[in-house]
Image (cartoon, rainbow, N blue to C red; front, side, top):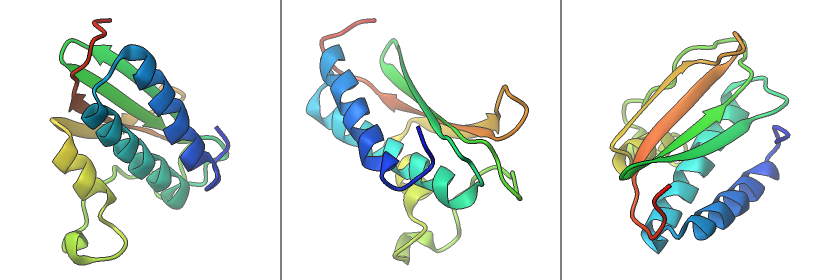
Amino acid sequence: MPARRTSVPEARRRVSALLSEWGADQQVRDDVELVVSELFTNALRHTDSEKVGCELALSGAHIRIEVTDQGGPENSAPHVQPGSVDKECGRGLFLVGALSDSWGSRPADSGGGRVVWADLPYTGTAAL
């Protein structure tokens, strides 16, 4: 998707539609939408990306979210900022960590940019 603010709600809509097709419970949909929003927004704010990718995959009792950016001047791994819980801005990765069983990042396969991933518990009717 294009790396602009209007893409964040579009990413949420697409994720919500896919999770509905998969039969995900409402809590799962809410949590995944929030994590996608936070990771996508971080890619917009902290990289020079022209495009940001987002993929979801089911694996047993977990759903994997991967947001891929094209990198920027400081292509360092994302991390929770100390004291970010009390700030207006900067709580995104704290929320991701709170909702996820695990999360992290790795260099993108393309050689530029990063993939930030999160594994969340999955409950629903679909077993893919």
